[in-house]
Image (spheres, one colour):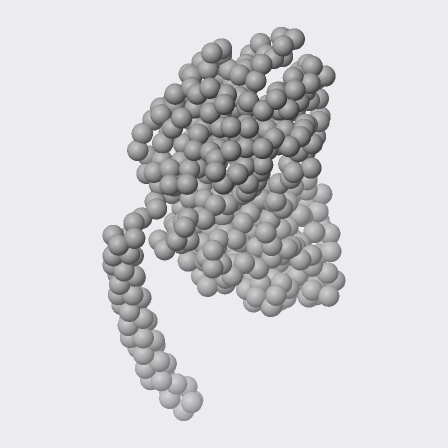
Length: 412
């Protein structure tokens, strides 16, 4: 009885002390955030900000109605790739029916505007041979790999029926045609830049409510009709911080396939419950102790700089607890590459859908820890001064229609 009377005041003191400390830390965090923002404002004024802003629009014109496929910057010029609606039916497809050069003001240029690119005799011969042997050849995309350019064509019914013409690009703005064997260079990076670790029987914790222990931080179960994530290693309760129904309620702990990965403060989960056809992807934040389901991670996912979180074609999730998904058609989008700004403040993540030729650009700012409005396009060209030109596309994913005028957006 005496002990019970004595603990009350101490509990009150401890509670009051906690409130004071919490308020002080909150105030200090807010002050630190204001100081950081002020410093970032001064830095931007001194060295210039690299945030992309929509500053103009334009259009590329083709001689015949064509479907846009891609655009890249080569030697300070725009190389536009497209498929004419009647090109496959012609016995003599010309280079200009598929590839064309423009200046940054969208004026059509002669084929020798970038020496060695479209005017090289060896390239012209290979281009003609490609369309002679593969009458239904269609341009898939233009791809820059550091100082190498690929023009990738689909030559058959299967997705891997391709031929790729390739050039080396020189520092003085010229191109050197190599051959038509660039398919070996047409390789995308891994879908994820981290490794998944599959759970084993050693991770199982048996009991009234069994679960799989992951990194000693969280515990996952698919028994009892629900997929449950718990933060306590307690098999006497089935309650957790997250739960959702599974299709098959009668399953054992070992019936589910579970894998995990650690990215900074985030623990990523890949779960395939028994008799289900698709994986489920969840993210547990070790700081906020919350769980969010983000199935878009499965298509491809990259770490943000300094382990600030992850980004994927359908959205992002930050260590701060913020996350967002976009109302966009992400079907077929694969991670292509990332481009860092000269000061490292911004990173551009590019995704591409092979079949449709549709692209998605996500620009992340490491100082503000935010992603700009997604940019959906049919190709993009990034110049050395940071200007970006993008071929407009329908955010809903509608296929591009043949046209002679192809809208562009200018971002600087």
